[in-house]
Image (cartoon, rainbow, N blue to C red; front, side, top):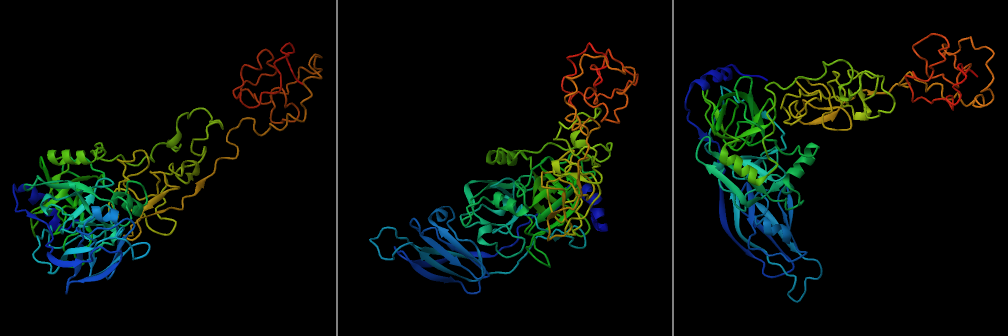
Length: 581
């Protein structure tokens, strides 16, 4: 993590000031709602083109339209298209936002166009929302003499059509800044990394009845509500975004506790601020946490207009701990500001929207380092270490293997604790404690005991098919690693498995010679089980540790390995002390 010299000075200058000028950071989005007049009348088919000269983007007000069952309204813009049905138009009264200045509209109904008036639709375009101006003034708040934000691809964060940033905390609950304005039926949250409008299948309308906000300045500036299913796919945003990052729940943030101290804690801000290069694209930057107030935080992470509503991410745990609201950084001093996630009214509304959206447990101040230092025996299955593990324990990691050199396939290599740090397709692994270039929740605090920590070695904390890692390539989020598979030893225990086949050759010996006294009782065949053929049947397994020859009174009591095939029936004749064949 790099810090510019001036940024380091902020850690001290920001803490020494009691107040700063703070600007709300909405990107100036020039837009207007222009009246438009198109009415198809009751019909089964209609076409038209809506065009606004010089508009950089366009969105149709379809709130007065009526679609019959089975009818579809197809909208085609310069770069994308959208199909609207009777179900989706009732909840999303505006079309998606289309780049360009025109949209073609086509109504179609299954079956013949001619009919008796039933199953007819009506297409009405009463207004058109367009964007017709430049960037305008923005609230700059770069902490230092240069902008250190870098491109990012966090699928949990999106851009509101209002000009702010917003982010998910569940399958359908989103958070933004309160001063970003009250959403309307035309508001869309765009999940895209670029500056253009997202494809229609990545735009989501707002459930207006669920939205609440406060816009009372620093420490009491927040907004939260629910998003509607996508009008094209029918999916909730968190579900769709989790599909993009590859595992259930990775498409939204876990919220967590605000750090109790500024020491050693850093804040990441990811959002869609204005910039000299790649303006309004998703970028991220990490800076020191400088002040912790009762309902706000200050930090020296770079932001600009458009970053309002960005998640305030605790870099050390990956938790979202607040919402960014105001800029206050200058060339030589100052800090930016966000509302704490546990601000009482904010937290209460979040809880009402999402019962499962609770603060994650407070992690240790320093996430427990990796677990590889405990003795070489694999930690995952240390339940009965002293005795020689018998083959009746298949759930353990591969017995006898070295977790520092290979991973056991039985547990999907989650026991691997080696230092391979390159993926199978050649990418360098990202440090597990880093959130750049990919934000994530696979941290030591969230997955204790899984070998995560301040390193970039391949691990499998979450049940993937084998060990993996995030990569340092912004265009490649994660990939599996070429960790060797451990193979269980061919002879897992020194017991009698090697010689179970020998009893069959001489099973008839017990009946023939049970009564006669053996001609040579004095010799000691048992002490030499290394030659199983001569004396296998009676007591070849119990190679007792007591070498004295012919301990006839107690041959059965001390079989340290009773399971291994206790010969056919040696007990019935205890009268003959040396039961040699």
